[in-house]
Image 1 (cartoon, rainbow, N blue to C red):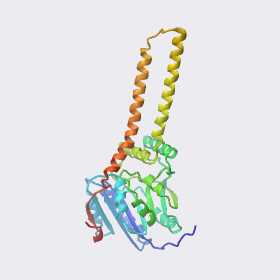
Image 2 (tube, rainbow, N blue to C red):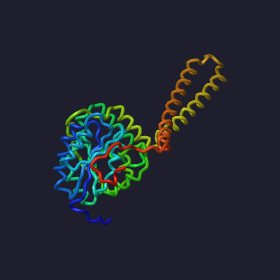
Image 3 (cartoon, helix red, strand yellow):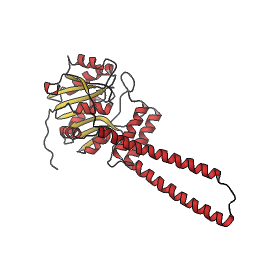
Image 4 (cartoon, helix red, strand yellow):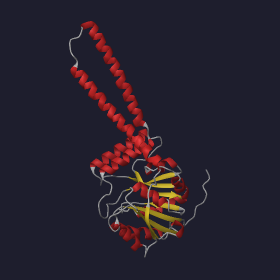
Length: 321
């Protein structure tokens, strides 16, 4: 496949989804600016304030006086996936870089990302090489999640590849036309395809504050990922239903034969109680799994926007409403 030559100094937009990250932004933005200056003919940084309760928006506006910073302030906290979508909807550059605001993504890799882009890759993503600085519970849960998702998803999803990425304009255009309201961006990155390559990196310690992704939110994101890209949970419980039915038929035949041979010797109260509660539990679990998929359908058919913007700063008039 022939690869068209790409600009030596492309236009670049860097999206930073932020939730209560004022202190980190004050450190991260100058670092990004210093890194991109020799690499791009024109660049800007979009801070997406996802309903922060600290001074994230005020910090972004203050930084805009010295750096090419633009601000998207969402009307409330819609979640990181929606904040990323908002940023992608407001870019118009050759290249788009996505970074977290906590200073854990190394800006030193941006030249490497851009070199791979010039070599013809459309998507370059960072792959965490070591999760030793995370808690044991989070490491185990992340490993189980990616293992399960890789076995059940209809598309390959790269383990330990997060939101630290560079996109070509074609990839951004493809992501924009996807209409899901409930989004699992790591799955969508894989779904759109394009020529991709991973770059290993070791996340730096968080500069300030604490993680804005508690375990409950990570669990919800994992459920979204499984239900968005796999129907295996539904198929598993169909198989469980068949298995339970076969076991019930076999047990019924056993009782019938035993009654014919030995007569009725036990009332069977324990057996009846255990089987009833077991089947009841299986039915409730299967209804819950089915409900997750129906809930996703319900969210999609309502057609509500993925996000709402309360305030914009630094954008051209064509983005203003």
